[in-house]
Length: 99
Image (cartoon, rainbow, N blue to C red; front, top):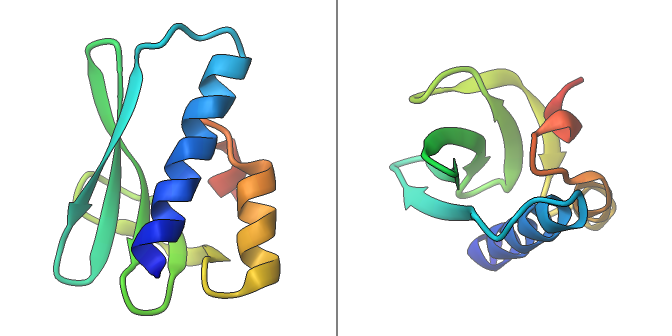
């Protein structure tokens, strides 16, 4: 269930990139770790972590580094209201993840 919501978030990020005039040169990959799904974004030749999503709680975190999320929860994909806000505000550059 959470994986499907992460996939929908990725679709929104890619649609946002294209709507801002970006070429079709963006892609995302979900890397499954022990605790988190790591959403990795590739634009042109650059690769970065876009977000971390807790696999059991659905909590969305801004990345603090390649290996770890920031401390504060930004959204929760299992809470319908929070999930809806996340999708509405999602932008490819990650601005929606700032507090």
